[in-house]
Structure formats: C-alpha cells, structure tokens
Amino acid sequence: MKKGVTITVLIFIAIVFFGALYYLYAKNQEAPVVFQSEKPETKTIVKNTIATGNIVPDEEVLIKPNISGIIEAVYIKAGESIKAGDMIAKIRVVANVSNLSSSQNQVQSAKIELDNQQKLYNRQKSLFDKGVISANEFQAAEVAFSQAKQNYNAARQGLDIIKTGTSAGLGSYANTIIRSTVNGMVLDVPVKVGNQVIESNNFNEGTTIASVADVGRMIFVGKVDESEVGKIKVNLPIEITVGAIENKIFNAVLTDIAPKGKTENGAIQFEIKAKLTDRDDTFIRAGLSANASIILDKAENVLAIKEALVQFDPKTQKPFIEIDKGDQKFERKDVELGVSDGLYVQVKSGISASDKIKVWNQGTTGEEAQKQQ
Image (cartoon, rainbow, N blue to C red; front, side, top):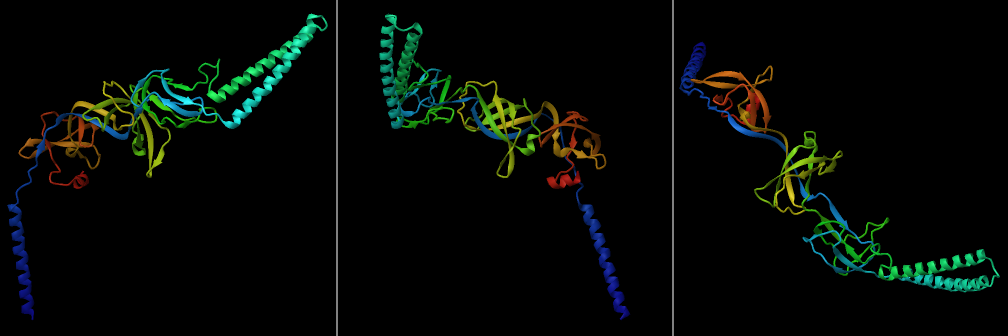
C-alpha cells in the first residue's frame, strides 16, 4: 500500500517537473514585444458641437387684407420679386344682408331729418330777413341744418363701404386692391381666386394673402441639446452646410440662444439663431434643412498627435508620452495639451516635430487602453 502511494507521488512530481520545463521552453520561443512609433503631425484642430435646423428669412411679412370679401384676382405668384406698393390681389366685397339693411335704414332716417331741418332753416331764414327773429335763433337753425347734412353724407358713405368696400374721400384707407407693404420675394400665396378672406383688425388676425421676405437676409434656426447648450455663447462662429447644396459651406455667427428649453422626444432642446455672413450669390430657398457646426475652439496649423498616444500618470493624472530613443528604448516626457477634437489633440509643449512617439497600447481595444491609462 505504501509502495503504491510512493509511486503515485513520484509520478506527479515528474509531471510537474516536465511541465515546468516545457513552459520555460515555450516562453523562450516567444518573440519579444516590439513597440511601434508615430511622428506628430501639423493639423488644424476644431472643437465643435452640431445643431440641426432650417434656413429661414430673417423677417417674413404676412400681407393681410383690411376688408373682408372674396378674392376676385391674384396678381402675383410664389418666387416673384415685388416692391412695396405693387398689387397683390383684388377683393370683391360681399355685403352682409343685416348690415346692408341697417345701413339703408340709417340713410333714409338721415334723409328725413335733413329734409326737416332744411324746411326749418328756410323758415327761420325768411323770418330773420324780415327782422322777426334774432341772429342767435337763426344761427341755431343753421347749425342744425349743417349737422343733418353731415349725418346724411356719413350714412351714405357707410352704405357705400358695405356695398363696395370703399367710398369717395377715404383714399387707400379702405380699398379692394391689396398691395405689398415691403420689398422682397413672394414665398407663398395661400389663397386662390374665389377664396373668402377676413379682414385684419383688433379682434381677428385676418386671412394671409401672401408672405413676402427679403431672401438676401437669411438666418439659421436650429436646436441644441441641454448637454451642449452650456458650452456655447453668442458671437461664436458657425459653419453651415445645407443638404440641398453640395460642397458648400456658409459662414455664420451665433446671435441668439433661447433662455428656456422645450421638451422634445424626452430631451430638453434650446432654440438658437445664427446670421449668415459673407454670402455669395448662391440662392438658398427658405425652409431648407441644414446642419450647423458651432466652433467652440480652434487651433490652426499646430503640432498634434493622436489622443491614443497620450498616457496619464496614475498618481498626478498629468499627461505624458514616451519618445523612441532607438533599440526599443523609450524616454518619458511630460506634455502640455491644448484643443482636442476627440481624435487628435494639440501639443503645446514637450515634443518636437521630429520626435517618434511610442504606440503604447498597440494591439489593445479602446476600452483596454482606457483601463491601462
């Protein structure tokens, strides 16, 4: 029994011994790790954030009628350039039966009063000429006759307005011809001949007959997520790309940031506005979708390296890199970093353009590299 146990122990020791010998042999056969190196590059690094939105006119004027009725004629179409005072449409007034009847009754009542006051005036004038009544009594009759004449003219004028939309003496204050109030391009004509329109007044917005805007003054209106709004500020430069216009970048300046956000699809969005600057003769249609690259920081033609080449001291968390000195020997150098775009980072000091930097995390995934850092 004891002999069998001894043999088993000896066999186990022999297996461990030969296993250790094989491990050492295999270890010696592995090739040593050879670290590659990369040189710094001269690059322009831009740190930005993206906003999506549309290109719209800075000011869009809605032309509305000052009288209700039916569109009888339309003189413009979308895309045309017009000037202030140009005819846009003509309105045919449709009289309201109730208002028309009331106005006719007022005219008749005013005519009866005028006839009566005229008779009184003629009688008083005859008596005044004979010296029967005083000048004050004659003057009172004259004033009453003048007032009756004015009331009759006003009633007739009101009846004309109800029937035709205008009256002699009113000029352009009430007119069936609708004219443009500004210079610009017609963006939209939402009405057609035969459509009924409502006048614009203190109690009603009125029907829009046309929208006119100066397409030479376009702005970008977009939205920024709450996670990015704290990084931006007014007057930052913006590069705008329009999906419908290929290979074209428009420069702009951030002019407005909404003080209050709105919830959209579960996220808080803040509206921003940017004014396009240095525009050429490229025609941009109102409403085109666009992307705005808001430039938070920019470093032009600076020495830069890939962010993956940077290491951080475990204790001080200060950045450093390792310089290749030849024969797989490396020297640590502390560096001062600048602007980063997520892939490349500006190196302000610590290296020169001729240095070769160790790729310390070659063959590892990004997650493993972060753990090593």
